Amino acid sequence: MPKKIVMADRAAPPGGPYSHAVVAGDHAYLAGACPVLPDGTWVRGDFVAQARAAFTNLARVAEAAGGDLGRAVRVGVYLRDFADFPAMNEVYQEFFGTENLPARTTLPVALDGFDIEVDAVLYLGE
Image: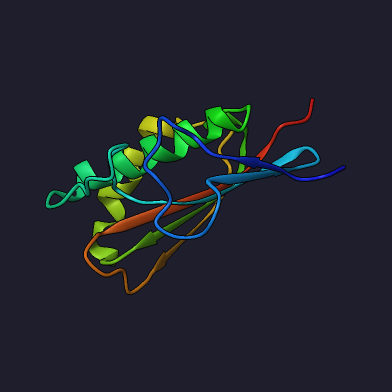
């Protein structure tokens, strides 16, 4: 089965030469989503506002790929400052709930000019 490229017009534009997501078989692989508005404007300042913007972009890409965040089987969270981990968990629960959660890895990374990036893999099968 060939891969299907997904570009989500309701999400922030990609920050480089990559697709928002690729669907291959029963899985959708969502690229990293950053705190950027659909018009390309970066969300700055408050960590919680940045996190909500990043997760909103991820959710919009999931929808464009034919699923939703409830179908996530793996999530990656990348934080500039690991002190934001508790606040990230609160925002994370707004998008993923508290039950039937996907596997997740959270790592501190050297993000430049923003505080969070998130990616995911969705299972789209029955």
